[in-house]
Length: 567
Image (cartoon, rainbow, N blue to C red; front, side, top):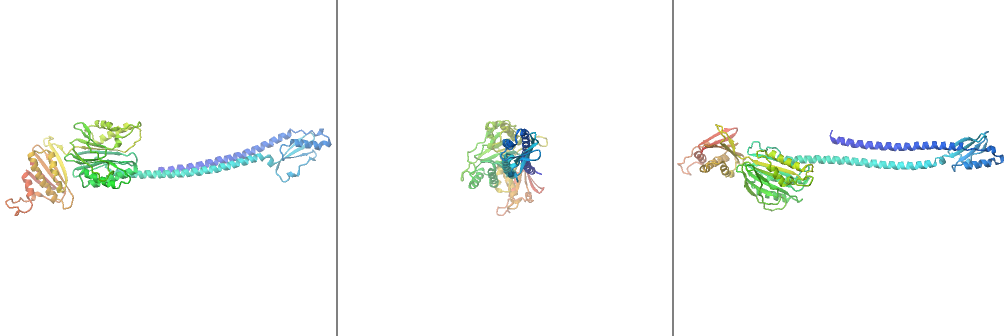
């Protein structure tokens, strides 16, 4: 059973207990009233008996002629109730003062007492309505009040029951909304990268991201993915909070993925996103946004800042942390047709890019003081250069938590850290010396990507006199793979690895296309003219002339071409 069942059970039990208690109290009041009436009756009878005992009819001192007159006088003197009647009976049963006819047919109480020395008996007859009139009038008033009390109690019970039912309905609605918001939160979080490290097979990146909404759902976002050896990433903050902001956040993230799937220029991506968001922005909401396209081979960063907090570049090798230079573009969704400006910079191996939303710098403590950029930079300065990105963001989160204390979180908090380890790795040779440098490049089977080979080759650090010729050989070999390994229209990857030692450099070209061995090409007959010579064979001939060794093998459904050049 869930907690809702017990909440409803407690509500119904409380209503029943309240009704039973009210009925018991009212019943007790009624019984108490009738008990009081009974006690008053007994007390009245005792008082009357006491009064009669105190009467002394001195009839022995009266003469016969005046007997009746004297008795009438005494009786009139004794009258305590206007409607009562009296009779006097002698010892022999003779009625000296008979009862009037008016008492016939009426209910009355009779009080008798023997008085005097002659054995006479005095009887007092008091009508019930006279004896208990006041008490009954008081009882009537009390009964009316009790009935009014019962009516009021019934109204109270009705209103209480109605309020309890409304409370139960409100609790159920609240729980339903909480469940729906939790589902929305789970959906929102599932849209963002949450598996770290995101690319376990890559050794050139160390990344970590964290997002803490101020409510069940929020408007902050971050996202990233690798395409064509480029890391495309973003971070944003939607104006407002709650469900509306979360919906805009979801749209922004979807636009980022859609537009950047076929575009590498940061400004072009942001412009396209701004146009789409401006057209459907009926609620006048905007998004501060930062987008970067980072070349994992060359370290070149192309970025565009749309009114977002400026990221921090940490040069761990120099122990320097500084803000990235950014043009002041406007946020997304504000103005259609705005021309966003992108910028470029180059990171070196070991550099880190720290991105965040204003929920970090604007975090408030109980004294309404802001965490601020100064405290943020102090926390960054305390980071260990060899620490993982996750450890660094955890330290920053702890610093914010310590500063804020028990104050309630006022805004969403999002952080993203990107550490570029670089594409070079040390590898021991046969003598155990770490003098072999490894560099990797992944390309799509698109001829338009061939120019990136030259940039990648420059980063390896080959002698200048060999750089151009080796690049020519690689372009020919990679072009052959792109043209013949994959069928026309089918997308595939070409992976190139360079292992540079002191005396040689070895290039390995791998693809998952159909089996294709370029070394089987026959040497072209260069004595023939271009018109007479068959098409093909010149490219692999050029590769053979430049490289010192060329080998091919088919392994694990992959074409593997190995080129070796002595340096």
